[in-house]
Length: 67
Ligand SMILES: [Zn+2]
Image (cartoon, rainbow, N blue to C red; front, side):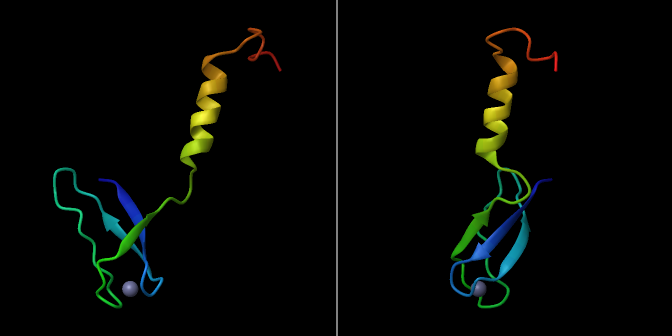
């Protein structure tokens, strides 16, 4: 089950939540009980992994594997 980190927009508290597929994704801050939580992407960048997979999939010269 994937765990996502959320940050409270009200008090800035960071908290991890289990994201259940098909379940309701309403997260409430433990500190201030605000439901104004924003997902934080940490550990990996979506744009970065996208760029690396793109360059490895399409090698224009065909010599990308020879370094
Ligand atoms: Zn909060």
